Amino acid sequence: MFNFTLRDYIRQAMIASIYVVLVFLFQPISYESLQFRIAELLVIIVLFDHKSIVGLTIGCFVANLFSPLLVYDLTFGTFATFLTLLLMIKTKNLYVRLLYPSLINALIVGFALTLAFETPYLLNMGSVFIGQFVVTYVIGLPLYLILNQNTGFKSLFHDEI
Image (cartoon, rainbow, N blue to C red; front, top):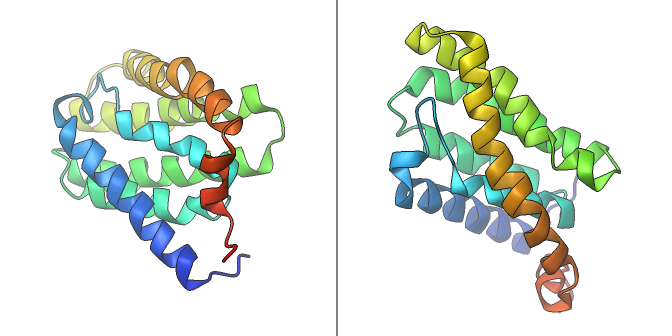
C-alpha cells in the first residue's frame, strides 16, 4: 500500500511516541468513560500524510497497554483508531473526515465501556462522542486549518533532501 523510506519509519516512531507521551501526560482524562484524549488531536496528521495511519495506530496500541481497561482498550480502542484513520484517508470532505473520530469511537469504545462497566450503551456512546468531538473537531478542525496554511509544517511530510 505504501512505500516506506527510513525517514517514514522514523516519522512513524516519532508520531507513535508523541501519542503515547500525550496520553501519559493527560492520563486522568485519557481513559475511562468520560475521556478527552488529547493525543487524538494527532489524527489530523493523517490528513497531511496517509502513512501516519501506522504511527497513530501503534501509538494508540502502546498507550492502551497501560489502560486500566487493558483488554477492552487494546482490542476495541486500537481497532476504533485504525478504522477511523482508514475512513479519514478514504473520505474527501474535510468536515466528514473530522467527524469520524467522534462517531467511530462513540460506537466502538462506547460498546467496550458498556462491556467493561456494565453501564448503559447510550450513556457511554454519548460521553465518548462528546470527548472525541471536543478534541478532534472543536480543537482539531481549527488546528488543521492553521497547519494547512503553514508550508513549514506541511514540508515535514515530504522526503525532499
